[in-house]
Length: 120
Image (cartoon, rainbow, N blue to C red; front, side):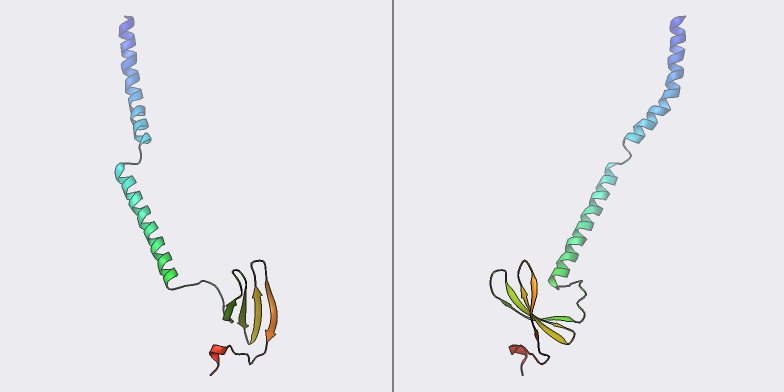
């Protein structure tokens, strides 16, 4: 009699627990092989687009700096990390000394100053 009661309890419990086990099985693997493959393809495509855009921007020397009204007229290298530069800002021209530690205005140049290459 005890074995009949226990078998009825086990069969009743298995009916109740079985859907819960099925849900646990489904929850443990929500991403299938096709989903992982499509995610990897999309990731590779995004990386390829980023590399292609970076290459194009570098090739055409595209800069996203607002240098309106400012122009580098020329530079002379004095050493491995030192140089002098002539910069035009608006209508004024400046001779700048540039080192790794600082940039210093050496002299404000006259308005009619022209570099040797620009003379005609």
